[in-house]
Image: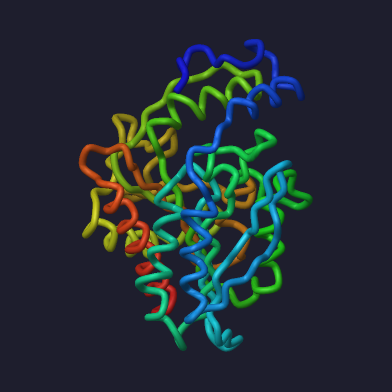
Length: 305
């Protein structure tokens, strides 16, 4: 990780150009393998689900098949439930939680809901434990028309023909200590802005849509997660990561305005999970379990309402 007061690429006060982005990309080294961790887990699901390739991510010399899992007997009369993970590739429980849900709980919803699960939206980032893609672009600010991020554009194209039937979308994320030690300093450096230190919340929290708030839905999801791991408290300013806490463990963002993944489905019920894997009170398995609990609670609420 880096010294938060000085990022080792670029000139303070000046946004990065092509040379700085190339320097940054050269520093990103694979630390795990998408082909080992994700693709075999998806292959194992073919007996019960349709596993579809919705695109190919190409960052020469690397190529990654982008894969999603669909309910086999897709029924237009049933509500659609969208689950996305690994939009930020470094957020491990987003990927592993989505895969665990598929392996252990997804069959429970057969005949009740149409499931669409994209467990690893950003495989290049997953391998390098990186927030951005290879072009130093944050996919989770890039769910916009003519997206500059190939990961975001491919997922939007997958979801677009199914939007009319989507009732719920849950996007699985983490907030980590490395956000403060690496990723936020890198963001400040990339954009030529000063780095302003912040606080990492200890616990699980949710991000609701300020333009379509669903407080009862968020409360139901947090209630299920609280059986698995602790909910993040507000800080002394009654905030979490600089945003006002509107309910225990809930903040709000304007999802579409910010180009966030949870905006793409047009679903009534949307949320973004944030697990804290660096907490001394949570294990990696608890983080995965928390994501699964959140997914199931979100689907259950959407089915009941």
